[in-house]
Structure formats: structure tokens, C-alpha cells
Length: 186
Image (spheres, rainbow, N blue to C red):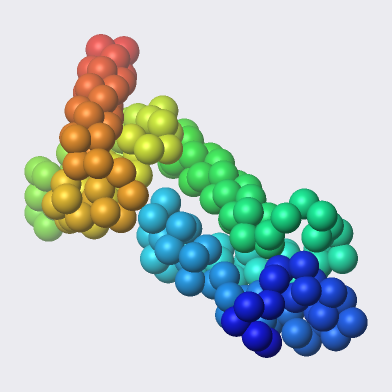
């Protein structure tokens, strides 16, 4: 593969010999991975990036070189996979919220108060996480679970540090309001 080879030329070549699709992977893997990793965690990014190229390979005959470069087509596939992942994640949090707290065994000496409180709060917290926007949830989980600084979270998400702060502020407000509402009804 020549460095000057256009995507249209590459498409023509891999249509004759599908094994040449590896050149598409080699050319665009890093860009797609960095994009996905900026939106999701690195383990998920590896999976979604691999799935992006698998789908692109499966759909390679549908790609029309008249549309332009392969890069935007691949980014579109990756964006759709990210959205699907986020919908799954939201359904997961909603399902956790429906489970309710695990029953607490009274008189069990090994349970500490914080553990009991955390178990009782789990469905409320899961419901609150499901109610957040994807951006708010990502920022909150990067800082709270990933223990990233605001600067690191901004870098991971590809956004400004101030945006991380405002997303966290909105997320905290929403979570506190939902938990207060649940406590008032429960």
C-alpha cells in the first residue's frame, strides 16, 4: 500500500482481494480508537473499535467511494456503536434501580453501617445515574469511580475542564434531587 494511495483506490483494491481490508484497519485504527476512548473507557474502546472494523469489513461492499473518504464512514459506524453501548448502559442502571436493596440481616456483627447504607442506596443511585445525560454520567463516573482529576476527565472525554465541572455540578444536583425525592416517598 502506497502512502499516497487514496481511499477510493484502497476500496477498489480490497474489493478485488478482501484480505487487503487490513490496510483500512492499519490506516484508521488509531483515529477510531482515540475517538472511542475519548467517549468511553479504554477496555470498551478496544471492543468497540474492533467491532467498528468488523462491521466495516462485513459492509465493505456497501461503501460507495463516491461518498468520499473511508474515515467519516468509519467514524459514523463507531458513533452508532457508542450510542448503542450507552443505551445498554442506561438500561443496566435502570434495571439495577428496579432490583431494590438487598435484605439486611439484622444483628449481623460483620456489617458496618456504611455497607448497609450503601446497599440501601444502590437502587436510588442506579436510578439517578440512569436519569443523567451520557455526558454527565461519563464525567461523574470518571471522577467518582475512575478517581480522575477534572483535568484527566476532560482529557479522557475530549472536553474543556470547565465543561467537566459544569457536568459534575448538574449531575450532583440531579442525583441529590432524585435521592431526596426517593427518601421523601420511601
